[in-house]
Length: 133
Image 1 (cartoon, rainbow, N blue to C red):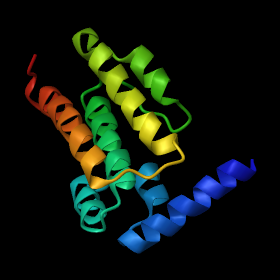
Image 2 (tube, rainbow, N blue to C red; image 1 turned 135 degrees about the vertical axis):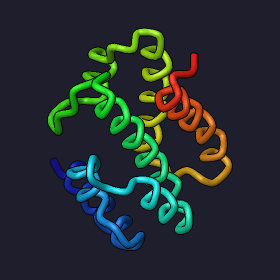
Image 3 (cartoon, helix red, strand yellow; image 1 turned 90 degrees about the horizontal axis):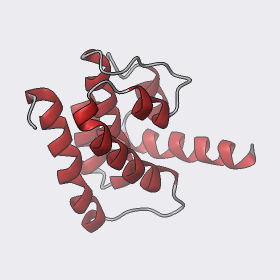
């Protein structure tokens, strides 16, 4: 419980410095301009939050295209299990593991590590948007 409260406090503090509330984005991400939030996170060099926003972009696309049914109480691996794009399930699982290692890990990531992850996220987003194999 204490760790969860600490994590929540850190997210609030970080997102306040970015000009948006990460908790608000997570609650209303279907109505939120996630690309703008991503730009703000990158301008602030908060790469951990940028990775979180990339993951939310993916969840949003999957939900909007009825590949998953978004519910606040679901876990990331609930989404992996229910994903109906079987050809992308392994890729989504890999992205989920990368995201969770960064988001739930105790260390901050720098620009170099972010730049290694960014193409993986962007490639998957393009696959989902354009039906690429």
